[in-house]
Image (cartoon, rainbow, N blue to C red):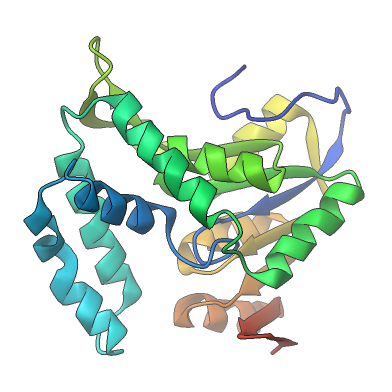
Length: 240
């Protein structure tokens, strides 16, 4: 199958597309953060690796610093520590994370995925988490195709620390455009769901953009554009 493909090709031309972010949008955490924590617990990454992001984590937890600072520290740590680690070892641990946490989802987006799938939409995930864990989680959710950050491996199948097509995966609108061209999709009737400003270019493309549990930047943009804003807290789902 082509890179990122996790489902099957129905052969339907001009099929409606629904595109989702995962972390904080479907999954009630970050796949990358959960993976890094597990890699540290298992000794694949050094036990003191948390020092690299601990200050930003505490600042975010105390609502004194932005989540973006925290997650970028985790991303930087992963890129440095993954170099030289066998792919199979990391992929196996990623599988454990998926198996244990695949039901840790938001009810609104979980139900929306099921509804759109029943209507015949082509379900697409675009995430900045590592591709090998994004693919597994997206498969469990019933998505047709997923894109994530592709960490390269060398001849010995160990991670090199390099990222293939970094500029592409950072531009979710470009990824959506590529997927539409390859899969014969249409934006007519399209739906998009995201939670942060990094999702804005992708959401600008679709007919029905949904800002779900948005951060301040996305919330401000969504209200200015008249987009639907959905918030889920505990067992309450409401539109703002």
